[in-house]
Length: 483
Ligand code: GAP
Image (cartoon, rainbow, N blue to C red; front, side, top):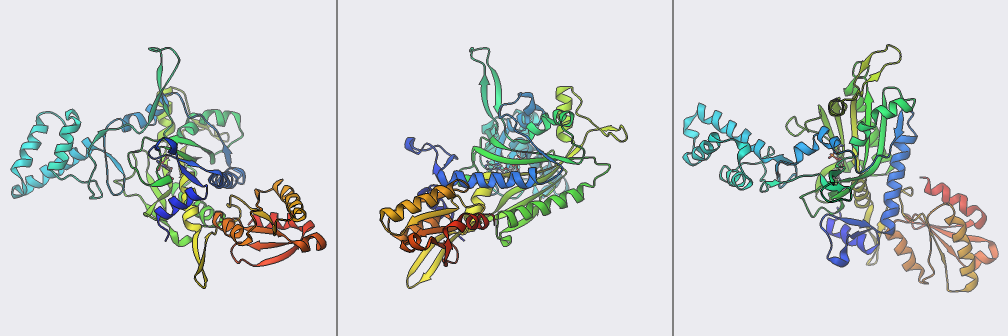
């Protein structure tokens, strides 16, 4: 498998991903998408939207704001959960409240030593006694750090922890222009909450009936403490999330989860063309599930740094709608038009990061192909529908007549597909350059083109060439790139 270092260097060199603000020395956990990266991101976004929003009968789209009423994040639990002393599992990068871990560890220690006093340790006893006189919550960061170290407290997965920090995952900012009258708001930590907050407006204004889903794509922001995972984990991320609402009395959530698992897997393998052997489902244990979820599965991809979550699928019950009802004091109940029954729908949430789909697509498509005789080529075997550039057009030689014809072919194709024109001259180099960025087709205009009105079309993967009449070229290209 390709290494992350190779992908990072490749994507920078070939205009896919640049470190953000590099001219100023960069900024942690942030990346900009170059010309080819922007096209690839757009293709992924468009395919997701088409598949899950436009092609399904029971789905609608939404585009809610990054800055929402701050109570949104109180209701969702983000403000409460993320302003506590957090520690991070150094291996899995899962975060935990330091006070909760300490609490659980103390309880475990006490019950063990009660049963078997020989297992007690006088040093630990003194430390525990100190806490017992106050409370865990009253410990400051330094005390917590010392306690975790002294008692060798690990994460629930048994891994070492980082030092606790007063850490808030939400980015804060202020609204208003007058100092002193500004109000604190947050950049959204997930796109999901915009969907819950608009639930009533959608049911009131659109003809939707349960079960139905609302999806949206947009930027979310997280003050991540982990670094060095390239676009896998960033401060600014783009999420594609669906909240699929249903009546728990009429739909079985186990069946819905299974149906969504099938659809998610089909999208990744068929629509994005990812190798199935690099994917797996992983069920969350009871311990690791988030507070709002009754069941969670991760669709993991085998990234260069191991199996990692690509796409989450959670049964969030009615947690969010209930929480927003409670905080807004507005009814978010759904009325069954057939029976008049009022209830709060439950929800299943498939949530994915577009940036992770992007990284997966690159890693999965990257190939170093041995061409024999000491020659090799770098190739992005992307599905044509994902490729940033669909077709490149070259004149075979620097001849004005060839150039003019090649440019008119370029202009015609560019009306419908992303097309590049290159007249650098060395045909071998021009092919290699397009192979590297994953361009499925290259069109070469030669002297026969002037007389016979045909061009050579070269296939990226097989490197086979065929002559196609110029007047059939446009249709031919459209057909290939639809695959
Ligand atoms: N609404 C549920 C939610 O936000 P999550 O597991 O925290 O759940 C959903 O995020 C998806 O968003 C993840 O599966 C992952 O693909 C992506 N994601 C989360 N944090 C990310 C980050 N810091 N950088 C890039 N992608 C991220």
